[in-house]
Length: 436
Image 1 (tube, rainbow, N blue to C red):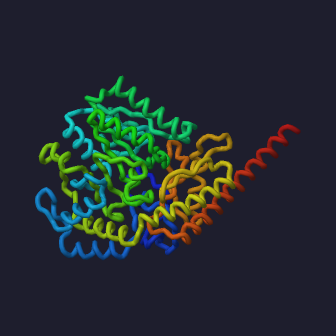
Image 2 (cartoon, rainbow, N blue to C red):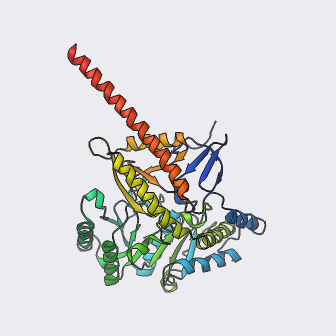
C-alpha cells in the first residue's frame, strides 16, 4: 500500500531500482532505455562514476553548510565554475533548490533592480508551479487551474510557434514582435515593465525553438526601454541543445540566466546568474534559502560541469542530436500521423495528430505506453499531450539511438495495426447494419 498523494500522476508504471548511463533498471532487473533523463536532469547519464565519487566524498566531509550562515569550499568553487560557462558579462550567481525557486528569485531581482512591477512572459512557456512561476506559465492549464488569483503584473505575449501558426519564421517573428509592441502600448508600458521572461527553446509546450529574429527583436526592445531580458535555461541549458546555453543559437546576450535540471546530474540545485552590477541593485538579504547551495549538490554540480567539458558532451549533444533528427524525420516520412519534428540537439519533439490532422494526446499516449512495454521510456508534452519528447542523456551513443528508434518503430507499427484492425471491424459492423 502506498501513502503517496493521489494527486501525483506518473507517466510510467515502473519502479526504478537503479540506473546506469542511459538505462534504468526495475526491481526485477529489466532494463529500460531512458530517453526522459528525469525530464532533462540526468545530463551525464544515471550515476556517472565521477559524479557519484564527488557526492560520496562530500557526504563524508560536510553535508549541509547553510549558505546564509557559513560559506563552504564547494559553494565558492561552483560559483567560480558557473561564472566560467555563463554568457559574457554574467559573473555573479545565487543558488536555490529548484527551477521554480530560481524563477521566483529572478522575478524579485528584476523588480528590485528596475523599480518596475510588470513582467512579460510568452505564450506556451513553462516556468514552474509556485505562485510567481505559475503566473508566468501558460504551457498547460493544469498548472494554473484552481490556483487563482495569479500574481498581479504579468502579461502574456505571443511566442513564435511557427508550426502552430502555419507561417514561416519571418512572418511568425514579425507578427509576434508587433504584438509585443502593442502590449507595450496597451497593457504594460515600457516604463512599468521590469523584464521579459522567455525559454529560448520552450519545453513543456512542445519543444519549440524561438527564432533568431524574434530573440534579437526582444534584445533590441530591452535595450531601448531599459527592460531586463531573462532567459529560462532550466531545461534547455547545460548542453541540451548542442550549445551550452540554448540562447547561443540566437546570438543574444541575456541580463539574467536561470538554470537547474541538468546542473547537478540529479541532485537538487538551481541558480540564477547576472552581472555583479545588476545583482548589486537588489536589496541585501533578498536572496537565500535553507537548503540552497547544499554542499553535496554543489559537489555533484562541479563534477557535472567537469564531465560535460572534459568528455565533450555539448559536442556530443550536437552530433547525436543531428543523428536523432535524421532518424525521427525518417519515421515522419513513414507515418502520416507524425505531423512535425522540431527542436535542437538532444531536445526533440514529435507532434502526433489524429486522422483529421488535429493534435492527438490519445494516440501519443498509446505510443508512449507501447514503447514502455518494449523497454523504452519516453514522455509527452504539449497543450493536448500530443508531443512525444525525445530527451536522452548527453552521453547517449548512436547505438543507443538506433535501439530507441527500433523499439519506437515497433510501437508505431503495433498502434497502426491495432487502429487498422479497429477500422476493419467498424466497417464490417457498419456493413452488417446496412444489410440487416
